[in-house]
Image: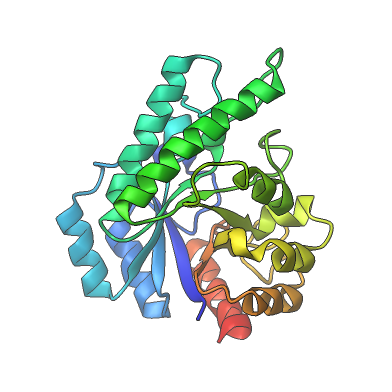
Length: 271
């Protein structure tokens, strides 16, 4: 059964981003629980930003799971990416992600690599850049396996990265890796920009999908754009997806209304 999830961000530098709840972890969890969400997806400045015993207690108290942890603070705060030409920066990026993986693994939650994948920078060779990405994902995938979790890689739209933009491209790239512990994040917002047919992409490459971001075509909560969810929901059920549909969406028109809209749409398609 597909499970519902809402995002909570605790990184001031990304406050304008697509997260439903902000700043107050406990208040966000209390609201999510009351609305009937199954889990939260958490964005923190660092792996040690929240004490593990405190988070365990909060999750238990609110009957929530930790679905995933984001790593974007590594780029936003520290300027780290896995494809920087500087090997020291790449090494620090891997170390930052490993720390986030260790934090998430305590709860059985994967880490997500989104913006920290980086770009092919002007004047750099694409093949070499992709080799850096492969090397990093192989290291991190093996670390994920040792921790008993998977690692989530997110194909982003062309305005955010020039590495891998579609589920097909991401799937074919994963096939070249030594590790089999890396899965893809199917972000419906990014897919609305890049995929010719969202349903077909999910059906064709479904075995690679390990997480779903549940946001509409304009990155507002589902139902506030033009995404056709009927076919997408059907495709996710057909491939046997049993992970989370996580609302990485703008808090439009406000966090509470966005959360209510999300859980209503989730119930419409997945319950």
